[in-house]
Image (cartoon, rainbow, N blue to C red; front, top):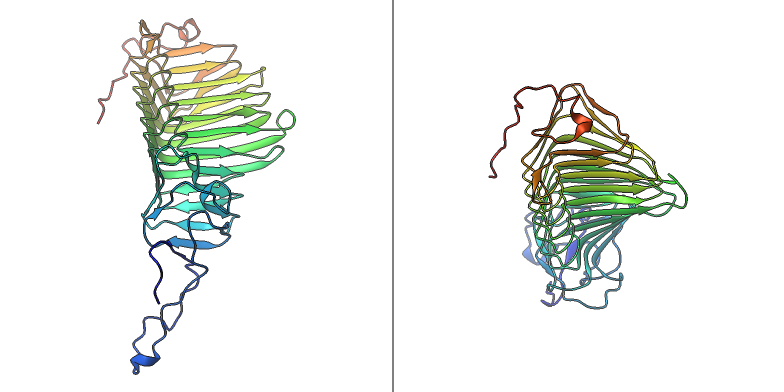
Length: 349
């Protein structure tokens, strides 16, 4: 069976024939490989099942049937396995590489040179991917008002994008009418022109868990979390943020909505352009017994070391190895007890 080279194919992994590949006595009677699903071009209709890329997919800008997405996945049963192939566009294009809708999943994908690398609406999963050289965000996440959504990103490298690496801005019809949970595990978001990661919104109760991840060498903050009229809960269990232009980690919850930053493992914030750790507006800080908050050698406005900046009525509780180095914040003066701060400054790899 022959196809024109202008068409790029995806095949449904569920459509494997049990007789295909078996040697038959009569070659004339051999069954050809099945065509699983429809042959598609870039920007075809949304997939609702499993699809697998069999070669690089080059998608020049154009009018896509699915809107502004090279590949669209819709629903929890929709899974795209790129099989480590590339999805590529023209640099500067305004289109999205992969659109993940309503709980869909993308795995093993390399996505580059789109307006937005991966666009997510109402939750989903990104796993084992590389997202790079896009004009805007590497991964852009949105929710619907008055909804409850979950998002997972794991084993993924996001770098050299023209704006923030991972960007979520949610919306709710009234205070805490929406809830969003975002899990980040083994993710690097480095060398982006905005923040490494940004999570925020209005009227959205936000829960962010970051495990064994890094944000470094971004133009703005490593992680910036900011919400209005809703609580923000952040859990950190293994996190490095270094050499960012602004803060290593910045958390704020406006209109006294409150929230909590919980340090469960090692958190290392160093050599950032402003504060290593900045918290404001009634967000509590808790370092658990097995946790360690190390904030060292950060520069506030390029003039003086400010490793922790807690500017609110926040409760700061250090039950384990919680400390900062050379802190000038009076809020922490009665909490830090180490005479010689044991913080070391790891060198970049």
